[in-house]
Image (cartoon, rainbow, N blue to C red; front, side, top):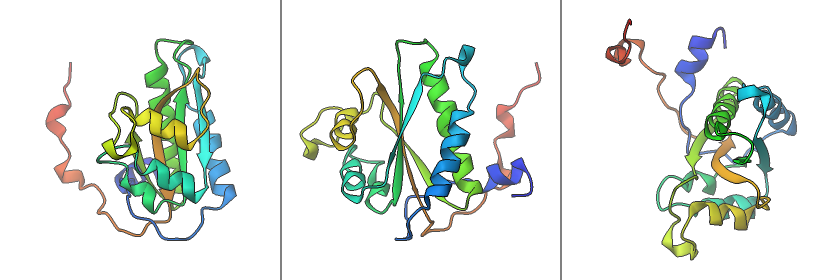
Length: 176
């Protein structure tokens, strides 16, 4: 990417992936970017769980009725979990780290998609009431951590148009 604006224009939620495995070097790069995320008072309440096991990814695809199907074809996933006892800013810190992962994935030529877990209900077919329970069954997450979101990763098997700069919601910007 030539500049940050072009990176932001190109980064779109990708929900279909090829069967090409995601190289460990790219996962390592995403994790370095996540670990450099801003955090209030540098408390760093987040922890990241990289999932490459296909059976676990397919279990993750069932965590919600809608919005988690991309894990059916994802070749990797990242669980963003936070220790909510460390700071009241845990949700912000976790979301910033997730955004770093999403932008870094685009820069590395990968597709990615955020799936909200915190506060979401599970697909009834799982026998769980909360999406977080499904993720905990698929991935060993320590009890002291809360799952904020999961991010699917893989090489893109769909193309999405870049954002059109002329159609941005400029009416949402105010000079105060």
